[in-house]
Image (cartoon, rainbow, N blue to C red; front, top):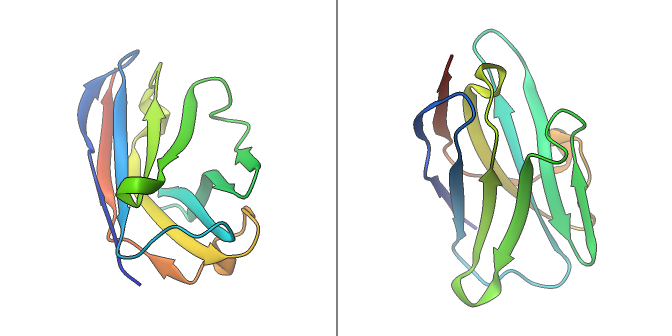
Length: 120
């Protein structure tokens, strides 16, 4: 299984970006898709995940980010609004079979990451 994330870029604080993650196969009903991020010098942090009828968000992004999917395109999106400089990080998408948990270690498949930079 391969994942490819894209859509990152440079944006001013308060702006928006939409990240996309394409899976090399169909997103099955028991497939959980997650977004994580890693800022310089920090560990990988959970951002959002969806699977089945469940969606989870990190507290830091609730109300600002939205995860969604287009099953016909095998694609998961992360729509980011009201971006802040502290959202600056490399964003990774990941997949696992099971529930949309928040632990990065539970995800088996990872994309290559896309850089998001938010300027103040």
